[in-house]
Amino acid sequence: MPEQKISVKNTLIAYIQGGAFSSKEENIKGRIMAGFFADITVFSQNLFDIPTNEIYKTKVLLTILIARLFIRIRLVCSSASSLNVKTFSFSTGL
Image (cartoon, rainbow, N blue to C red; front, side, top):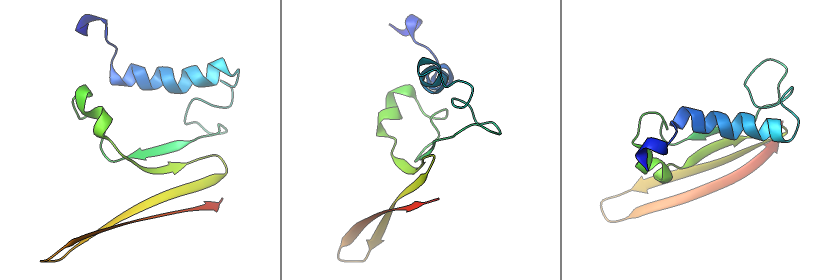
């Protein structure tokens, strides 16, 4: 029911800050602030600029966790005769 939906912004706030609160870690997680731990995700499109019914098409491009960096790079090489797609994944300690 459209009248019962919440905004993308409030959904993300609830997901991020609610998770920190439920684990009793709201003093060290749940916000991007000095002294707080942060997991950061980079998406293929801005979730605020697309229709909500298109969000499911969004891909994760980069995830940075507290102690590790996970990167997935997708290279698309095309030529006149074929399309070649390669995905590379690696992680490194920070």
